[in-house]
Length: 147
Image (cartoon, rainbow, N blue to C red):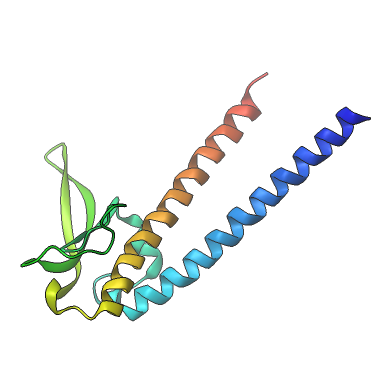
């Protein structure tokens, strides 16, 4: 009976983890879309879902590292930069697209700076969810084909 209880507990834990994962993801996407609109990124990326076609989104002028998160780099300009890869004569090369330019970092309103940093972090968070989904699907496919 103990073995059966352990399996039931493991299933319940797994269900709770999946529920938390999905809840976190939905909350993140909702907030990310709000920030997308608030930061007026529609001018460069008219469809919200197209944001995830980019390989990366970076930020200039404001730190995203753990130790200095949100700190500015003086005499720099704040800018959200999206990176994609394009084929050029058989080679892949990075192509940068400025999604939004905000001017000198010293002149940024603290609330706007926070929104910019939050947007980048939430975009990366969603991008990581998509990576997990991709590998989850591959593992399911592998499991269905193995004996």
